[in-house]
Structures are given as structure tokens and as C-alpha cells.
Image (cartoon, rainbow, N blue to C red; front, side):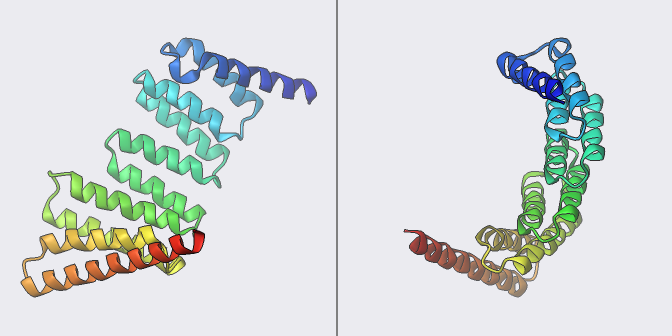
Length: 208
């Protein structure tokens, strides 16, 4: 066991010395990280390092495969799903991004940040993708609101969730044809923004 520990430390030092991020040739870094996975097969960070090597080399199917191995190796680790979500987001695969974030929420059902993250991705996609139809935008906004409401339910004074709910409602108002409904959504969004600012000020006063 001691030899294994020393070997692992030596490999970690080698990776640190080379700098996996700086190795443009996967052939040089891959064997080192593969060995680290063999020594510690349930450590997600080793899989993440190998997946990054593949992704940087443009080997996207291999990167995805390695990240899925990480999920199998440690399915209870939220970082596995966040790393997968980041990978899919960089690939422009929104459905898979959301699926990974929802899996993360499944393993952390009492963490409001898990649900807030889902809401933030729905907001960003709705706001940023001009090719979406209005029907898809409404669907995404509704799903984002469900997620953010779950975050607020878990933590009533969650400033980021209150803020993002207001942002989602403003996007919803932009899609509303009925002026009265549009104004009602804007009023609700403004109230949430005011509430978030009050909490932020109170928290700042407490810590100062």
C-alpha cells in the first residue's frame, strides 16, 4: 500500500510538472493519467484530466466516454455531473447539459444551488439562442421557473435564486402579448429584485 501511495504521489508530481493543460500531445499525457486512473479508479479528477486531454485534442466522443466512466466510478459525486454539463455545454448540446444538471440535482436534492444552476442555464439558453421558437422559449422559461422555485423553497433568502426568478419572469414578459399580463410579470420581477437587494444589504450589514 505504501508503494502504491508513493507511486500515486510521483505520478501527481509528474502531471503537475508537465502541466496536463499545457501538453498539446495527448500521447505524452495520456499514459500518465491512465496510470493514475488504474491506481485510484474511483477518483473522478483523474477521469476529468484524461477527458480534458481528449477534448483539447478534438477527440470529443472519447472525452464523453471517459466522463461517463467517471459517473460509473463515483455516481454520488456532484462534480461528475457538473463536469459533464460543462462538456456538453461547450459542445452546444443543451438537452444533454440539462440532463446532467438534473442528475446532479438528483444526487443533491437538498442543495438549492443545484436547482438554481438549472434555472440559470435555462435563462441563458432562452436569452442567448436566437434560433429558438417562442414555444420553445416558453417551455424553457417554465422549466427554469420550476427549478428556481425549488431552490427558493429550499432556501427562502437565496439571493441568486430570487434574482434569477426575476430575470426569467422578465423574459416571459417579453413573450407576453397581453399588456396586463406583461405588466403583472414585470411587477413581480421588480418585487423579487427589490427583495434580493434587501437581503443582500442585510447580509452585508451583518458581516461588516
